[in-house]
Length: 179
Image 1 (spheres, rainbow, N blue to C red):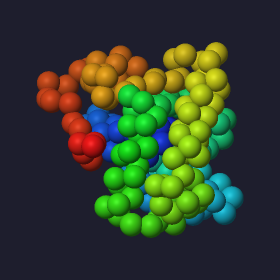
Image 2 (cartoon, one colour):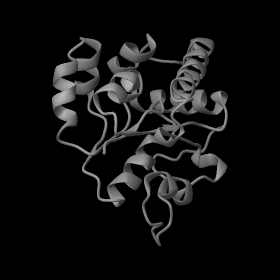
Image 3 (spheres, rainbow, N blue to C red):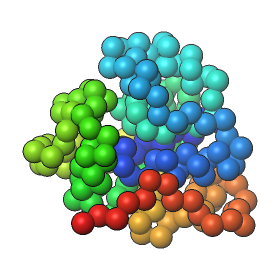
Image 4 (spheres, helix red, strand yellow):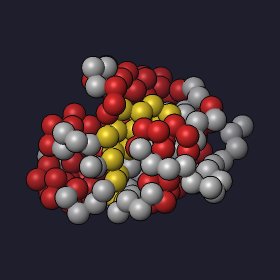
């Protein structure tokens, strides 16, 4: 079984990756080359890479969840989200300030820096989340929607994946306070 994190970046994807690694998954974290392959339409390279791993999060997987579901019908999907689209956007902006202009943001959102494109980003976030929920509407055992900020943690994840709940604190990566 493959497990795909399909939440947008800055929604707790690194936290999800840490959890999946704890469960013993051979996990693939974000790699720009994968996003570039997706943007160039090189799906065969991505599908070959997927064969070598158990779990995935961050780009490009959220952009191709329908294709992933077709090619890996026994897979599970986890949509991480933030408490509100505005909280997500603020986090995206803070991350952009820390890391500077990035081609990855341009490939995904159309802009290297999000700051002057609030509504476009919020619309993208909302549309993505709704598209995922609509797609999996008739497949409830395939999708888990979580928001770590709302207290969802090991319990929901373990029930969804059929894993025993670890006796360790829930990890939170890249957690930043927002103004």
